[in-house]
Length: 308
Length: 328
Image (cartoon, rainbow over all chains, first blue to last red; front, side, top):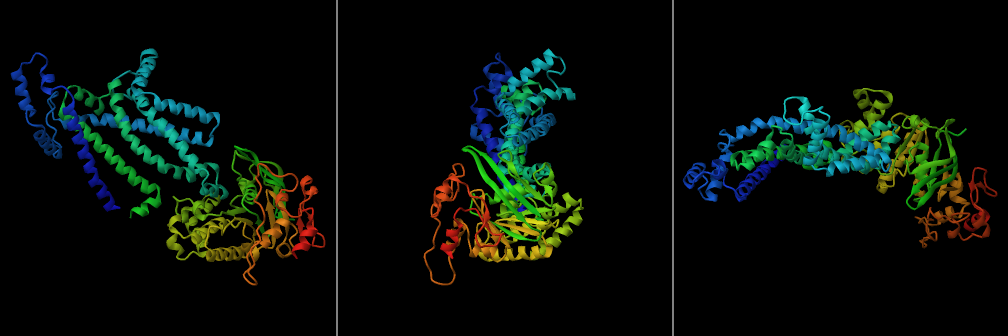
């Protein structure tokens, strides 16, 4: 088990290397020179050249990449061009807000998605099941930016019961959480339904009934514990999409998280901050995947043994 | 007074092709302490009959439109009655012990669950009771194996775990649905020995469901033969084996290879089992039967005593005389 974790962590480094390299290349392929953007349209050639030299942008791409990689290893992403502060510190300041939003969205999805999925499976092909299916299909196909704006229009502008943007209180968390959670929740409903339907006809579920156990224990303990195995895998993978979703949701609701910082920084070609954010998000993603793998072994003893 | 009494039981399943009558008017009794073999090929309705007795006919596809099942004078088809007896009074062992055991729970916990959920035993008490049971069903090094998972056991050991689980609360009726079919031949014999030993110790009734006449030959007191959802012959084991009164039974006997004597070609039963969605009129065995005549096509035969045989030996055939004289 220990050796397995070490091996996985080692491979994770390659994934992270890939992520930082891709973002390096993409940023430099995007048109727009940071020096021009920072100095504004009135700057003359000499000023731009001086700033480019100061930022190291006059060097060849290979040289820039080498310097960049060396700095990444020390988690040094340089000063933010825009905010004149250390890029990594800027990103880290924003992490708690994003984690808060992602966690509440995850909790909301689990609290609503799992029970709805169970109900849909137990009442499969009934009108209840169909209603839940329609709801989850809509949830999955509603774009976050649209839903966010509609929620603002209804609850902030129309009913005036919740704040439209910003942070600071639990009330501020409600609309962004719902917006971020809905697509995730919808996937969870469908996964739970199909996962449970797949196992309810298994022999061990018949056995549990034959043992005289209550229907609640049969479904929620004997069937659900097996259905959870694929659910956990997909939930882990989808959590990455949830993190990605924060970029849009944070922008719509002016939520002071990493996602909004990232968008602002991309607009200003603030390379250091963009790279630091991406590395951080990629690291979280990789760690969650590792966690899911470990959890998988915990949920399914057959996997645990094969790995030993 | 029989412990279990099934009368005119009908079980139907809604399928995409229409309503299938899996059990069509089956009646039989199982006495206290008796071993009864429920014989028949796949689709004959024997497993569904067991499910009906246990009250675990898959819903909503399956339903029981008519008939009665009484156990110890209680109506098992009344709402909630079967649920209260399952596991405590009536227990079941299934065919494939690998898929019938929950892969994600330790076997000790799966056996112990019986005591925890039904008797409110503590974790420690349940564990001790599970250990006793595992020893009783002959699992070597039981104390070490309590915390193993089903996939770490061999097929025979898994079936022992299933049996331990079924016996936990000392049921008075054990239904074993093809308990040895998924096992190697040598292991089959061990499991049958175990079942009969435990049955003698517990004094419980045993219903053995199987398609294998050999498995029950040395074990059962009585046999019940099912064909296309109906009971076609019933009687004491020796009687039925030696004086088959139904052409289906005699056909089954003729298709068993003999260990001794000349090696003749096996005599198979002609044709194949009927489509339950499209049963022949009258006797459902008619298309495969050499004795079939017009009466067989028009009138569905009912169980009746065979000529010159004991009253306990009955067959559902219009022409038992021919069957009896031809074979023996």
